[in-house]
Image 1: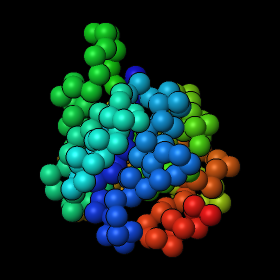
Image 2 (image 1 turned 180 degrees about the vertical axis):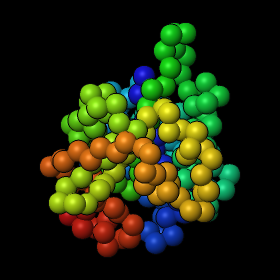
Image 3 (image 1 turned 90 degrees about the vertical axis):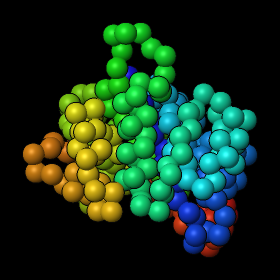
Image 4 (image 1 turned 45 degrees about the vertical axis):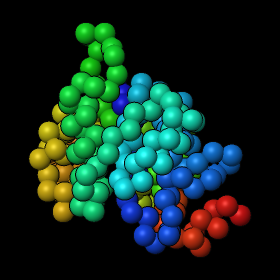
Length: 204
């Protein structure tokens, strides 16, 4: 079973309003990303929120009711702290009701400020992970790495133990892990919407 994780706990300080709730194409950033992950084959999606937990949870209840929301009590510690909250939730076996022989095999970790990633891109990353058995699978183009990223279950403990203040970079770059970069033709893996100007350009 593949689980999707959406990191939406940031303060959105540069945007000036909650990025997860920004409108896009008749929906919102967070609902769109949840829909993308589900359409790409994720059995369940966990959305990690921060200060705007109630608003984001209400949005998902209306437009993506099968998504699970969990709150990061200290989102100021960065994205890895939100990922660790999600992994703790998965580890508590509270994500989905599944048969006894099913388990979480990997997680697709997406960012709420990358709303343009295509379903086909996420599906190709999951397929590449299944075929390769790599520890970490990333979308790439022209030497750049984007999001989302697939982490195999065996990497979860390392992510849980990593220093949130340092981020996940040390885990991703660990020399004993197998990384696979998948070349994609999807600008959305690099489109990071942080400011009103970036959002206006995206909306246009």
